[in-house]
Image (cartoon, rainbow, N blue to C red; front, side, top):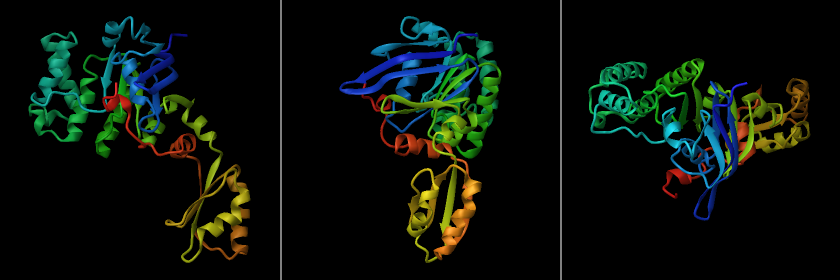
Length: 325
């Protein structure tokens, strides 16, 4: 078997007294997409910056495209593309000039840089704005151009740090298509995102981080199986207390029910949803508790994320992006 495109072993990175990374291990097979999830401050961007040679780890090792990111940093940079959280394009140049400049800096001759810029401008739906100065671009347009810039040199490994932030649904869909096409051609992608459905849709494997550590890894289905089968969702009829509904069905679940009094709903993890649905409805009927809606669904990555981290995906600042380094 070929060596994984990305390997990290025991990565440690400290910013002053704060341990941003505390022994992170990763492995990304060539030609696959790894989704890196976690709340802000979990260490996702710090991992990306270490792997992209922008930060030196304090301990541990990492290889990208078979090359050590510390000892062979220059060679690693020639093989990777990076689109960080914030657009890094020049606002005083046009879109075309930005891409052509990056092509020339990447070693392309003038003609090849011009051709590659044209291809990417069309692919990212920026052809009509190609010769406008970036100061007139919207935030979403700048974001698309920044991602396009990371692809100019056709990297074998691509780091995308929350690439669809600020994009409209059409822009997000277009980038998803581009990522799928790249991996079909053999490109390896490490993707950080706070859109959990994005990781569900794109990632072959998922790693969840919290407080600088890897707390779970696996495929989307494997992670969902960790939070306990199906989800039973009940919506109370007007005038019915959802807390009383939760009490009536509590012992049927594999975990405690979650009550949203404002929304009038009860959500509970269950092992055999179809098998116990009749029991749940019988108990509610016997107690005189009417419902307006009953649903069974598989757990989502949102359920996984909250179960593993105990918080939302927007919990706090990431040290690597706030200058604490």
